[in-house]
Image (tube, rainbow, N blue to C red; front, side):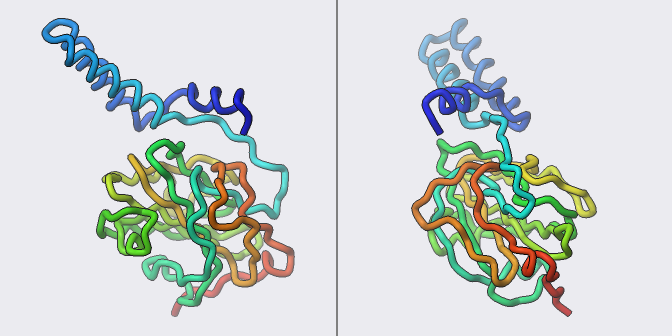
Length: 233
């Protein structure tokens, strides 16, 4: 991402989830101008921070039908194999997993990794520890299973972080979703995991930065994309 793209991203319009926070900041600003100067500064700083945090830039997905895209901006902190969340009802076998940690400075709008149909959404209450830590697997989370056009299954999981207290999901079971489409966000620091079909080879490494809706995490080759993930009995 070059300087021009970075500026455009920073100045992007906010996601609607940020409107109440931005409005609250400007209300405090106005009250501060009337009653106390320090309060005005506090309101201004808060409103500007929320404008930046809730920014929602447009993204251009690569024209590759077999590409699995990053569901979020952030740092790749895990590339391993793990069983998907039990509440999704998928087979409890270790699938390739890519975890992306979102700092408070990253764009927090989540995007669909690959087109398909949402077959299951499962929300689970849990802890609120640092989303980059191993213990975050016990954090509050929202898991989504997507059946691809080929019949294969992938999963994307929104995980709350140390100060995140609100996971937003705008899709529903049965919805047909497009690659790179917005589907929700997590407020104030979080992690987003993607579980891929067995045999998929990730194209990213730990320490790499991902751009939601643009970075290719993996390619599903035809021999893998045409094999559906079995459901747990």
